Image (cartoon, rainbow, N blue to C red):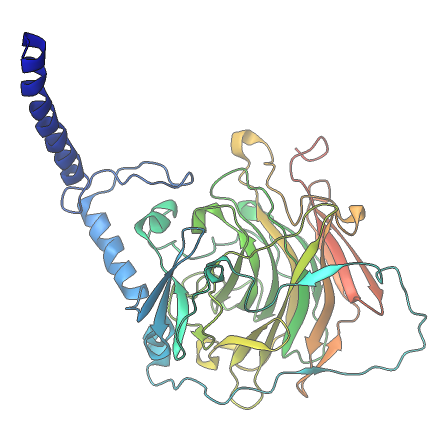
Length: 447
């Protein structure tokens, strides 16, 4: 064997040993015991310093909300769905629900009142092709054909990176506290211009008693410019004082939030608060409160497919209403799929009824670089662009005191900055009370 061959024979094992040593050293440096930097394979999570104490605090919190599963499903989009026994879900950790018994008898779902009308049928929407996303096949984690066993509920697992994207552990899973109320009429909703929150909404707050709301919501994937901004389309069911600390709110719809989820996919979400977003409530199942009863819908999971400009339009129907017998506020997805409920014990004013309902879009504009950002609302198109371009809410309905649905009448609309996002409402037989809304954010008129 020549000299080069002998050297290669000696050097190769040494190089292999060194490679193994440095690989082991790197793993040790990033282990839980020595972790100083938490890397991420998500584009939305930056490398950041994490102390051992903070990491331990985060992991203790995750241990509380990530309940032991009887089965685990890996979604094609990277989500991990844990199938948790329904009696072990996070909701029942709430101190007010210590003795709560999960409602077994399903509530009576409100039905639409048949209203006689002599109005001429408006066929402007009759050729519109919408595809309602079914309650079983609309989430990405269903694509591999796996399902959670009966008696369990699917819960999207939270990870360390999810918490690190939040401002703090306390802020994880919570909406940012709203700023000063927008100057408005006395009966206008609690929308705000502070903290960068901008809206394009329809609302009703009449003297009638309100026990819920329903709408069919067009689903898009708006672009988000800054990681801590979001874009959502939802229903708000509200009661309490808008200028105090006792506002009660129940919310559901779809949202794109890179900070919360680590990607830019639209996802089903819920929210609740009983103290004007101060300390109570959270998104989805990230704290105790919402009791899930459905084994096939994961709150916080990605929605697929989504609408495209000049292409197919997809929408989801959401109903929130109060069960007149037990007083819990239930959520239905699609036509008759019960998802779960917010127990009456969580609320003060909503323990009785709602006083206002809002439907529409909300974004956060952080004014990065001192300018309005290009975060989109809805489809990113203004309302006047209409069907297959602008996003819509259709068939806006209210639940009455007799547990029946009726078309929302005399709605008002509101947008803080119509150069950035706007809204236009209408009515016809097929779509009932409906509206188009949204916008691109930054443009020559929106700066």
